[in-house]
Image (cartoon, rainbow, N blue to C red):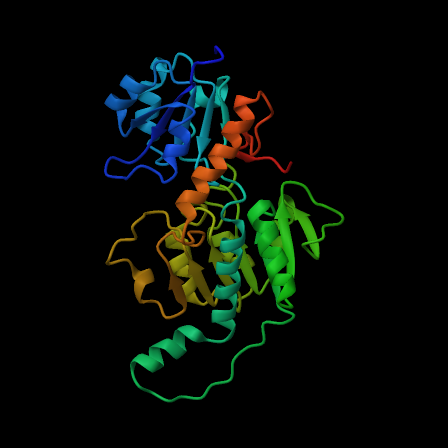
Length: 327
């Protein structure tokens, strides 16, 4: 790249999606192109050095991949990169980064809110309010309850931190056990999952979707949980086998579920989860705060500065593992 030339950046969006906010700052420093499907990718990828991906159209990118003759770096504007990965990208030399850190705190706030909603029986209070019914009930204390965070990474750490601040006892599950961790009572290895499920009052899925985690929460996992426990999933939908979850809720194997992600999104209107009184649901929005789209662009621009200076990028994704490391 000569001193006066601008790097070419292709921004991959959904077909009807508006361009991300903050693009003018990028245009001042790069030749910015936009793509939304396979034909536009075939036009824009030749000469592209950097991609910013806001919509994970993996099939289109994989089909047009052979036209990416100069691509060096792909930045995913999400924490999870599972929908972006395909064999040629995983095995190739292209660097991948993600949006680790942007959504951690807001997702942790969502999880703490969900825990407190269950403990204080807010779903029933809202239903009673809508019916104009005055009904006194005793509710649970959250303090002292054990929270198991499956996926003790960046997001999981924030969940543990807030849970601990609220008087709960956070434990984590990670690839490897950690003897000491400031945000958890203890961090256990993956092999201890089923044993730890039996101790938790709230089980929070904060793990990335990988071949190892897909379908991890099935009938066996729900049978291992306490019947009084609640499941909270802010990770990825396919980590939970939905049919097994519905059966566990109906059978009383677990007491409830707070779900932000699902195997099928949007969740079909006739799905039984909609009508379960021990289930709370949101539309894949746990981390989305007012201004999050601009925050994602600003994060990319910060990494773009590092790339332009020849410095090491942050939020580097281990493409084989499918998530960013702990550095």
